[in-house]
Every structure is written in C-alpha cells, then in structure tokens.
Figure 1 (spheres, one colour):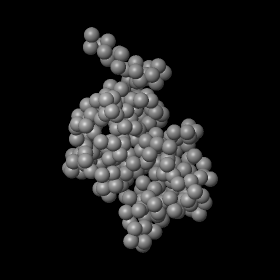
Figure 2 (figure 1 turned 90 degrees about the horizontal axis):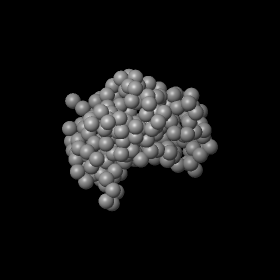
Figure 3 (figure 1 turned 120 degrees about the vertical axis):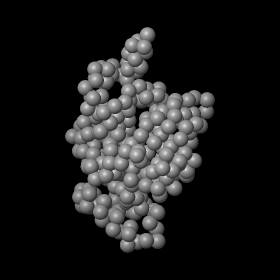
Figure 4 (figure 1 turned 90 degrees about the vertical axis):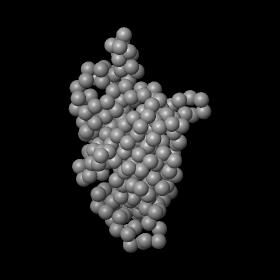
Length: 250
C-alpha cells in the first residue's frame, strides 16, 4: 500500500491552472523523482502535498488519511516534511539553533530534542563540526545538509525535497542525492523534485516527468534514463516530450 497517494489533483493560481489532473504515489522506502522544466508545476506539486497550497479538486492521502485540507503544521506532525527550494535556513542563527527550530514540535521535551539533534549531527558530521557556527557562513553544500537535517528533526516517514542540488557543484549535487538515497534505503519514503534529471534518475527508483502541470512520462528511473525521448528532452527541453507524444497519437 502506498504511503502517499495523490489522485487527480487540480491546483489554480487565480484563473490559471498550474496542476492539471496529476496523480502520483510513493511507497514506503521508495525514492521517487519529479522532473520537468521551469514552470512545469514541480514546486506547486510539493507545496500542495505539504499543505502550503490548496487544491481545487482531487485528493492527497497520506498513510490512509486524506490530508487535502489539513494545515501544514499538522501534516508535519503526521510525518511528512518538506525541504524547500533555496534551503530557507535562518542565516543569523547557529547550526544547532536551526536544528532546534526544526524540532519545534518537541518544545517541552528538551531531552528528546537534544537526542534528535545529536542523531542529525551524527548523520552529517560536517554539521557537528560547525554546530556553533552561524548558518549563513556555511558553504552551499553544508547549508543544504542543514536544511535536510532540520527536516529530519521531525523523524519524517516521507521526506519531500525541492531542488536539493540547486546551486551546488556536480560533485556536491551527487553527494547530496546519494545521502538522500540512503534515507530511502533506511525505509524513509523520499519524493524529490529535481532539474538535474540525470543525477536524480541515477539514484531514484521511479520518476515522473511533468509538463505544463500534467504527467508526460512515468516509470522506473532506469527505464526513463534510457528512453530516447527523455534523452532528447534533456538536450532540447521537456516540452519536446509533449510534442512527440502528440505526434505519435496523430
């Protein structure tokens, strides 16, 4: 049974339909990538799943419960946590203070908070070395580790990440995606939005390709990586997928 099921989702910004009948699912311990060009609807999809946007139609079911109208902070409490695009760390606070804010739901339980923070620092030894350093002075890769670590403070059952490799060198991007893959191997469901499609497909189990708010392609990551249409799209733009499929239908 899927941990996350998104069924026939429609999301509007005013009169503009950003997501058009999208359906995806993520199983426990599975890493699923969502790919697509700028404006395809990837971030809107994550924000809607996380409760930061509201769908006009469709359903979002997490662990058997419909969360389509659940407030974002309650969704976090259920175990679905998002790492936002651009990291959104608190640059004037220390690494440890950022992690403490990630564990805000543990206020009143200082021992549990310290325990979870210690586990995050063990996961990211580089952050442990900089726990008293201001977050704004960290490198881009370290800031991304901190953003992920902040989400891990809630012991998520599903970790959603929006462009985790954004602004990173290819080496750091691969390292971050391998770390995320490791969470899936430990049983955490992972839903990752990425423009770095080649690297995402190298570590994901399955993938969806979005084009103007719709799913253009879906399947196993290795099969999509070998698909001629996907390979051409990386060179010519994801919009070519829709054109090719339209031509095939005609």
